[in-house]
Length: 106
Image (cartoon, rainbow, N blue to C red; front, side, top):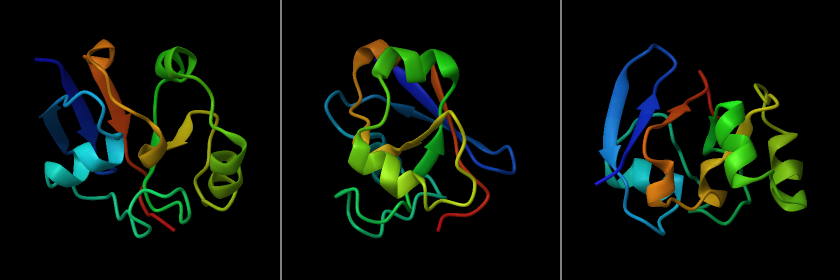
């Protein structure tokens, strides 16, 4: 089974199994990863599931949609590798992915 590593702002790591088809947000919540608030429940309406991916993964999974980009514009720590974890669907191809969490969610 594939693994994804969530890294908190303080460096704490949480290695979780990939459950294909779930969002990164739901994967984090199901595995009690702190730092993903997910206030809107995954409807791309709040930005509280902001994460940082590496450029490799941004290229592999694609850029944010226009709706997601608008939400990301409101996050204080937005970067070129920012995504909303509710908008990223997991697959076994993501084995080894490292997802970094911001210091604060909006």
